[in-house]
Picture 1 (tube, rainbow, N blue to C red):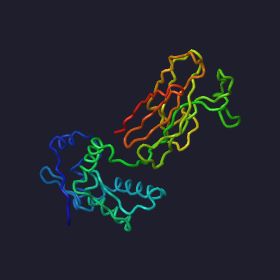
Picture 2 (cartoon, helix red, strand yellow; picture 1 turned 90 degrees about the vertical axis):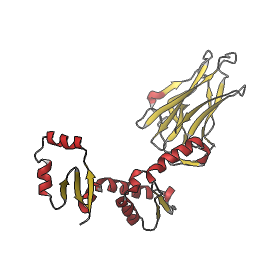
Picture 3 (cartoon, rainbow, N blue to C red; picture 1 turned 180 degrees about the vertical axis):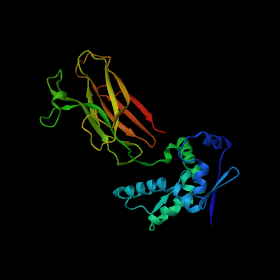
Picture 4 (cartoon, helix red, strand yellow; picture 1 turned 135 degrees about the vertical axis):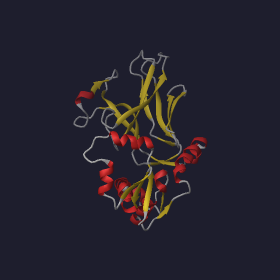
Length: 273
């Protein structure tokens, strides 16, 4: 009968003695002597019994893979690349191959180091990433014309220009699942000075787990950065503002603001490595 051996540290063996439970380790091993035995500082388990230890984690991975395969974005893939320490597990490899017989399953040498090596390559050569699938919906907080029956009445306010607006709107740039290339630019938004004496325009950037959120205040939405645009020259009063847009790189997001009169640029970069 094939078996698997697990080395048990002496400190753990001592801890077992102090654990209060209805069945001691020795009693449990004695009751399952056909599958489990204790030899010196090693726990010997039959391969069949050892496989049960990995069942829940392997089943979780397989169920996750099945749900991913239902996404139209991966409908045409031909291979599965397994990386990470668990990918070296032959049990997991066999289950993945059995579940997806029509796909090529690739397990590189030292699969456990593949993630680390990839992170190092990306850090030194960010241009290695040409496209990315958006994990979140990214956008900028702002206001938009108030729509009766659509927007929350509590968010309604009147701008100094006499316009009826809705505050706290999530102005979406890209959505969850979008495939974007490096350098992709979101829509260009125009922000104006709030009043004649304001000397800055503050831009808040958000990420959301929802595909098309309406407001920045909701579950799953998080502010991850901000940008302040200098508007110290107040001579133009309310006729001041900037065009703002998000630019997406391989591992970073840049928010760029351009003064509508001077063309002066302001930017902030958020690195996700």
